Length: 123
Image (cartoon, rainbow, N blue to C red; front, side, top):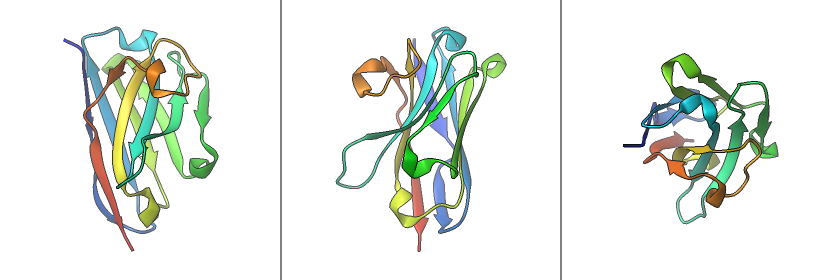
């Protein structure tokens, strides 16, 4: 069974930090690129960042550059997203996903998904 389980979300004040984890099982983790998405209240889900399967190449949307850092530990089948300098606009459900290729930008390119973890940033 393919499973991606996010954790690490919570309530944080503006300017604070969180580190999200994505524990994966049921597929060969180190053959998949890792992506992080989020969906804010009343908004569509949007891509944030992706990381190649070999951990050598990363991509960030402009609005998270310098604040969010994607990483992975293939030995632990786990991906991460470090969130810093959080703003109330970052409030959303954060999702991790796996893709067969690096550079995937649309949800359709990610065949495996987690259930999401809530991040709430208070002002």
